Image (cartoon, rainbow, N blue to C red):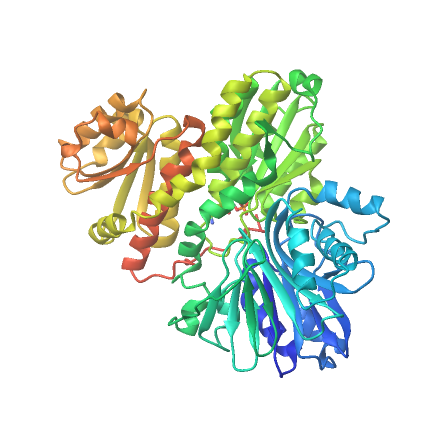
Length: 616
Ligand code: AGP
């Protein structure tokens, strides 16, 4: 996920572009750049690192031009570097483009362009875009004012994936063209000036009048006009919306906190993580070269991580085992690294880490390498420390996760690891095409089901209102639901400071039930029809002791259950068992969030915590 900004008007573009990028840095910050039309020539200045680096570039201070585009990057293809930073230009330097999204077929397009004599200076997917635009533009011999829009349209017709694109052309120095598909882009309407941004915060200080571009709509902007074209380039009028947000709220794109924003970004994060990995019923990991021989030779798989990332490992342990038929265990990095684990060349070690910087996880990886094991990092940050140590790295595409409490990274990690398990099963022929197809089909509708759950906030807020004064809360579950109980318990602890404990429901009567008394809050998670009866009887045992119970049920479980015995009942859509932790955790993330809000706490920056634990 990246941030893009554009400006066309009578002021110097550079300061407006840099200010916009600064506000969009939460969308990505590993490299940044701007392009400004300077006396009919496109001047590009960009560098690795944060937007603040651009302020140090002298040439930018001297840019007088008043039309420009800008970009702050969250690398998806190509490590963070100056060459990979946007804007990108075509071979003739006639066009400059910034892009937010993923072009899934960029490898094929790059080959086609190379066959036409084009060369590439970066490893990015984006660089094919300006070259395609230039290719179509120069082939179009109709020299009218829409020539550039046609060239952009012919280009997007060839793109598979997601994009929000801004285009500058030195043969049309007084206009800018934009288009989007599945990546956000808004147009701000000023007085003899117009603005573009990935979302409203970047430009809210300049205008409150916005056009929200829909998928496959094009816009051509000049200082005093904005023309809209549909997917067939038919011109149409669009009504502007007036935004009433205050500036503070705007930095989170209208959400009160980054954590809430990131909870609501989960459908997009899951979609982007699935992205290019499923194709005609097959899972693919082009960056991995595991063979049937290697996987068959493995004695075990170790998954090693910390905190929520470790919970993601627990959530996929049985899936990886079931699909690969390889004994799989999960361990906490800070424990694993000190107990001389039985690891050797017949062990595949998988390390899950959102930041890619967690000290214990990196240390555990180094230990496994010393012991001869292959190492695979699962992370959200391209170019992070762990990716430089691991033999292999695969990425979630959750975009930057700012809130200390991990939400979208967790569900994206599970998504990616289920895909990895399916990839192993494919190589080992352990899964039928039909079963694979069913899981993929369910995975592709998963984001919509998460969106459905995200609509049930009123009920969650109400439960939070009754819980926030509690001193203790228990989370119970069996099987895959026990894992969700562990993650849900961590969420509520770390942002509301309520003491919480997750317990295997079947283990309760072996001691901990002694803590249950009148008024104690217990949350039972029951989504697996094979285990529900047992967990219900555990819940009945605590209800007779006066507990206040909230249950999270799958629709399938709920339809056959007498739910009158529970205080609160939250129902989530059914899904494949492998994917259920992704849906089931969402209401419990929201519950933790609203409990913390009821207590008036700083949800995004809880006390004593850091987003990335880079010390041991
Ligand atoms: C999750 O909500 C916590 N903030 C924490 O447990 C986190 O998951 C853990 O520190 C691991 O971080 P990583 O994924 O960046 O390695």
